[in-house]
Length: 283
Ligand code: G4P
Image 1 (tube, helix red, strand yellow):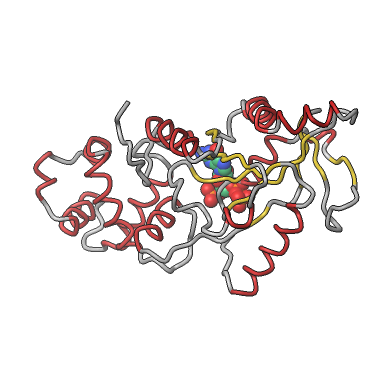
Image 2 (cartoon, helix red, strand yellow):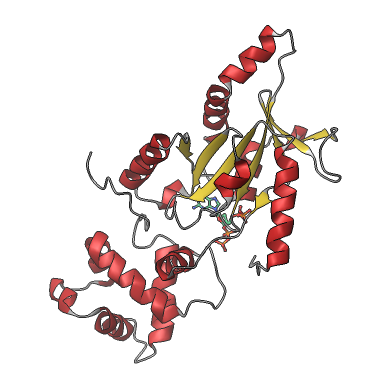
């Protein structure tokens, strides 16, 4: 779903999120593990303030494992607990419940000490479109017993969904807009399919992809397209033209660009992370 963001939409999204923040214990901020930076909303920290906050890196199955490990470290170093998930696999609920319990351990034990009853933790998922909010929600929620029912404080029409005895989720994720005021961020969003509108020309995105893959994953590129080592002497533009020929697309480099982009989105060139951590390959 492509969402066109106008100031009015942003204001409304912020208002809704601010309302929902009052009724949750913790925010699950979703980012795409391939673009942990580009898929973050710039306003998020300011909006969440001191609310406990778990960073969930989605689509981990598509990202570079080494980079994911180093991103988790980098987030933790900023005081942000982080976990990577593949929402298409069946292993998410336990891990997320466990880390959530540990983040909120002090709060929960203080409640018990005050004589309050043990209760499920309440969370909301937040993130840009296509980051995987609904997929994760479906994965976390036991559909047979999904709806817990209306609760005071919840905006009309919203429901708590039961994930486990220890976790409930608001059925309406918080949707935030991506920021693409710098070109590289925009291209990274476009290449992963986070944005699918026509804002970025496919040949520009393809050139960005070629430049990136030849630097970080050259073997993936040569193997997939049976390129020669010497092809790396070509400029990005000439390499794109060469691929166009290899695809049998004559000089239709726009069609070839779309094909390259689709291959990369689908993981045909293997797993990759576009936003690199500074601690690259250090351990
Ligand atoms: P949203 O609610 O945040 O907008 O995202 P949604 O769950 O709809 O997910 C967007 C796309 O990302 C979906 O693909 C979904 O299957 C995919 N996705 C979500 N989580 C993961 C994950 O952990 N791993 C992988 N590999 N894919 C994931 P789709 O419906 O096929 O849409 P599209 O690919 O045509 O965009």
